[in-house]
Amino acid sequence: MKKLLMRWFGRTPPEYRVDGLNGIDRIYNRSEFHNLLELERDRVHRNNHQFSVLLFSVNPQKEHDVIELANHISKRVRRIDQVGWYDDSHIGILLPNTTASGAKHIVKDICSRHNGSMLPLFCETLSYPETTKLSD
Image (cartoon, rainbow, N blue to C red; front, side):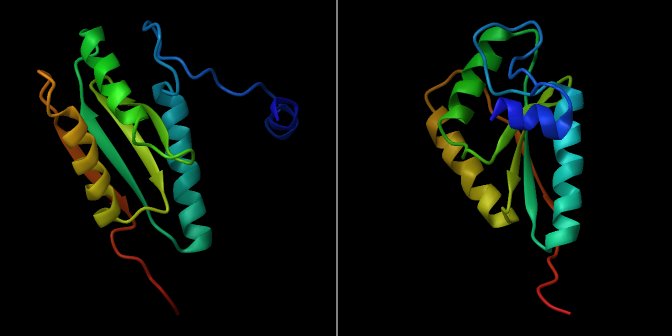
């Protein structure tokens, strides 16, 4: 698979590591995550489906909080979902083929797993496009 990806993209697949944090995998850095968002937006325009993005507020200076949130997220995401830094204070989850109502369900599930934690959880849900054209 790695050879196939190298042939398609001409480079090795990105490392799934957060810059400066050990032990967390499957989190893209900001530029890689924004590239994934652009690719998914292009896919939506071609295929007339919808995607959602969840943005969880975090303090990147509090490594324990970031790790705890990453653990909660990793128990809920699907293989097609992508997790990455949206900006300096938000971890995003890209949810392909997911409507706004589906994204809200995932937020509720992550929050319910998080209830025993001391870390407050703040999340914004975005969907693109906001309304889906089903037919011409």
